[in-house]
Amino acid sequence: MCWGCAREQGCTDPSALNFNPDAEGNDGSCVYQLAELPTTYAFSRYQSSSVNKKQETVAQLRIADLYALLRQLGEPGATADIAATLVARYTKADDQAIVLTTGTYAPLQDTYNDIASGVVLRSRIINTYGADSLISAWLDTIAIRAQLPQYIATPAVYTLDNGIDLAEWIYQTLRGAVLYAQGTSRLKALNNANNTELVSGTNYTAMEQQWDGIAGLFGLAIDDAQHNPNQAFFDADNSGSIDYDTEYAYSWAQDALVRSAAVPDTDFRTLLEAKLIEGRAAITGRNDTLRIEAKDEILRLWEQLAAANAIHCANNLLALLPNSSGAGDPNLPFLNKAWAALRGSIETLRYKNGHALSGEMDTLLALVGNMPPHAATGTPENVAAQTQIAELKQRIGNAYSFSAVQLQNW
Image (cartoon, rainbow, N blue to C red; front, side, top):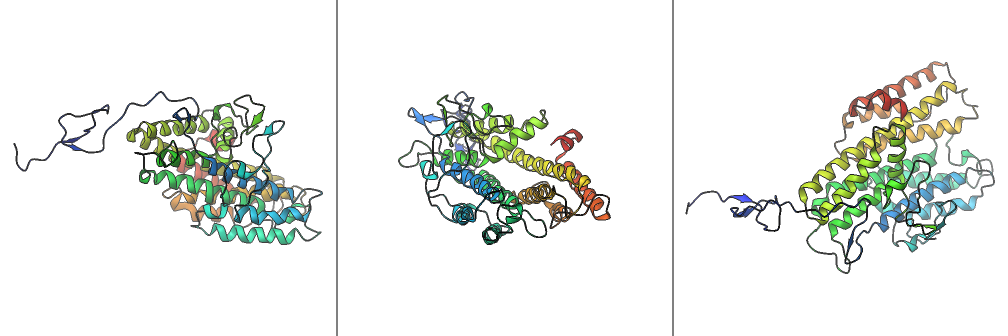
């Protein structure tokens, strides 16, 4: 016996792949055999699904529905009664009818409580940048404007006099402060979740549920591979109806489809879906090494997708600026929307600590400005706006090593 000698550290679990019979102390390095990876985000225990992302599905629906109703206020024939429900959809957990369409398919669920109850968007905001106060003020402003006949049923109902499209900015802020912020922060905190015992009364562990929630915040459908950029839902089980919890690709998952279709060699959808499946399987198999690898890759890819979205929004704005005739341009609502989408997408990047553009955020926000550029084509103001957005694109491209093809086609 060697008194004072260090005890050999290693994996002391005989069921692990890297069991070390000579190890006297477990160093947490045990790796376990994974079951065969499923081809879809489908996991079960005791012959029933162990996936639970229902609350996140309702959060996705509330965001999508709030945006759809905001847009409806600006359409011909709209009435102010729509505005009365907007604040409630943000601040309350009241059961309400789902607005999001399922096309020619019948929806499996009609209301939020058919999926999960108790979901309040406001309580899910990560409020680092005052998103809650902003959204509350913006919704109040829209509700007031909806009562005025000169605004209701026109884009002016959600557009300020300086051209800021509040409907778009609200939507982008919710995507950033709820979905992206919650998803990335939960990924970083995953180690704190228990993975050794099932949550009481369920067939999943706390870590499994946490990971499922992250997949739900991303917007992943159970069989995401079946979805396409032009339609967010797919009748995967051939039932003739659409299950909002399993057969709908929301928000970020749909963005991944669209960005991947625009530049096929940058397949965000396949890569992110694969890592979400792999990470969940690693949690079930208690393979911490693969779980951490999947987590890190999702954080990297999701941030890149957020940056690609910003490039897409910049391209939309740059396509409109050279054809602007100024304040009276009938296409101004499209320009206002494009600007708000760009501003919101840039702000979204802030919600992941240590992102690649951390040191340039003030510069990027200054380049996009505080309101849409309404100057006519050929004026110094219009030329300056085009130059600034082009510079913003290049700065983002440099930070993420995006190619010229990516910068052009997203």
